[in-house]
Image 1 (cartoon, one colour):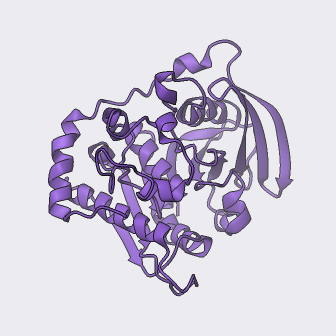
Image 2 (cartoon, helix red, strand yellow):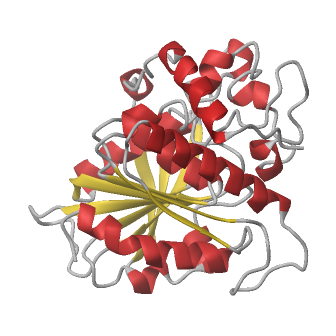
Length: 326
């Protein structure tokens, strides 16, 4: 069961914890030693849609990335295009957004490169702790260093970026925006687990708390360690603890309450979305406590694609505006 506290108590507790959060180390240049990351295959799978296969030292294997290219895009030009990084949720993959939404149509005339990288079934957009041994997988390094450099060097991606995602991807969107200040001009999370320690009771199992519901079976000791023994690592990967680093980023947070809504749903409360709703409210409360503006959308709805597609449509004008597009 989720442990609930008052918003005031949550804000006060997080304020006490915030000074303990170590400044995240974001230079991952050592991952580029040796031959470095490289594209080993490029496949056109649909109009404007290209899949890249990247040999990644950070991952120790090849990984996939799907790109939606804007009209008029070509490698042989000095022009660059802004990017929308669109992250998928848990137990899913890089084809999710084009498979289950109309993102290709939505972005067709807006002049952005849409970047949809694989993030693992439950990679949590992080370089894993692996019981203190480090090593692969290094999802953050793969995305924010290796892939970003490839896109800017070889695919004419520009320096203006926004980021969005659903569920685990919502966590990733806020996490990357916070851990890489200045990298993204806006971030949007749809049903994201944005306060990763919310509901965890020290000394007790965390199998019933928010992130564990979204990624069942995940060994969190591999990802960030134990939330008690490695609390500093958890805080360094918790958007609520890193909220102060989001000042200046345009923010959008949306979540359903778990009940069936106008776009359908199960005839009972969805526990995964209900937990995400608690996280979204906690995170938004933390931002507002710091006087950081955030747009919120809370509604009747469940953890499913119709609501995430609608969420992207609603947030897209804000994301485009942050990129200087209409």
